[in-house]
Length: 310
Ligand SMILES: [Zn+2]
Image (cartoon, helix red, strand yellow):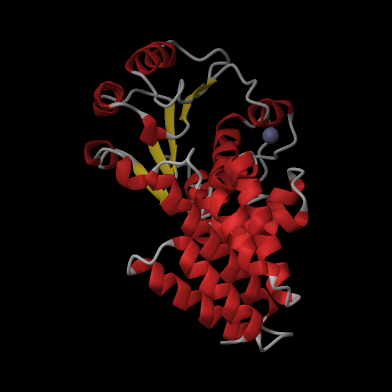
């Protein structure tokens, strides 16, 4: 259990016990805001079904079958993922038909459903029918970061394993491993609850521009450059409230600016006690915005506080 034992002590212990005692349920739901660990645990559980040379009943993770499972090239592991934004009923019907045929290699047959919360209601109902009459050596594994969106009737027929959210430190590690620069990875970790969310943000040009503008604003303030005041109106304002944004996007942008700026100052707290004053000033700007002061005015006032301390 190389990849998730340390970060998921409870889930991994439960999995080991179930596999060793050969007490597998016919359907599992792996849920939590941690797609990385959920994926690793899914692969491990699937390997446990197919491993050629288990050690103490646990998958070796090295044999041909384990490797094929990890590469999703095992003929008895079926996978469903959203087609566009949804998993549709035809996808579920089709895959359940394939699941019902006997396994290619004489053992288990498994179905992995990614982002199970995206099943539309007819897809979910179709799956429910299958769950009501499970058969033989079949294992169904649902993954989700949004447990609340899974039908209660489905939840009651699967065994749920909860995965802890990814820590900020671990998120930075995973993001840099996937090729994202360290400084961007750190900022993404301040703003994202899940790895998916962070990766999506990293690909949005609008977000990258917004982040640049926040950093520039902070650096002007830190270096006591009066330009910080006009920078709000000339640049930051456009990145946050530009015409191209919907009202909801504008609110999201404002929230990101406040969060990122706060996090950047929080990082400096250890070495620079004066950062506490900056955080206080940001909180005041936030409070003003909550009572309907426009973003630009609130941030112009903030720039003055950060520049001159008043
Ligand atoms: Zn193996």
